Image (tube, rainbow, N blue to C red; front, side, top):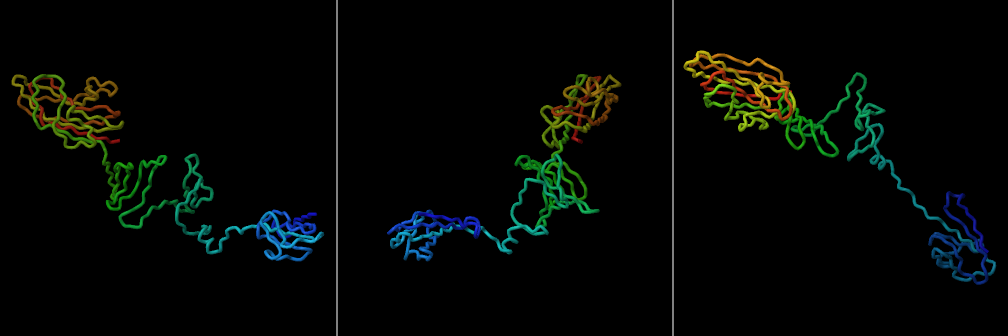
Length: 343
């Protein structure tokens, strides 16, 4: 006869169980599932000695000597358990950040907003990020610092893992710089407040060789030297500036004109700009109409003429310089043409 009693509730949940057998004459083996080494065996209430009085193998308990008929064999099987990892005070202080202030190393990641001086950080529809709120009568501040004298903080703008732009302070050159990542600085602000644009489209070209014009009409002024050609947007081959980006541009030009008319006492000339191959002021279309800058030269007189203008242009528009002569037989010399983007 076998009798089992579960005493788990006596000292916790499932720590041991007791099973009682009534032996037959000479019986040695008693089948019971257990963890080997985690049993106690009693015969008629007396505790037996393992290895001397019995052995166990996880599935049965075997007596060294056979039991008498009617002997009561009780097997107490203990459930194994392990104590979970525990931290003492020092280990806990090292592992966990103190809510009242602490220092830590390594990366900190979060899927939500981070608030500084704000218990309910919220960036609205802008996304996830840092919400800094200053104390009463104080500003919320982001301070970027370094550990060496020639370094400072950088704000990096990144799109889906790819660096795009950064704003940083160049302590070696004492200026704030706006840089397209992986390329070059695009705007610099010095400590004195001077703003420079290293990539601003700009050019100055000239032709110091006299050009003799023997026919009247319109003439596209040519140039042989580039004094400045930032971005290489002016072509000496085509004598035009190609607009790299839509915006406002300022252009200015001067030329020296020498009339060689021997019989004509009055010779009328002008200069203007040619936009996309169309002379501005004669057939300007959407650019509007302007009065040509004119003057008159008499035989043998050399005068200079200039023109300046701000134009609203689109990407890939072309701008050249135009000279017009009502009469013929003149020399155009020392032509200078400059322009740059202003916004």
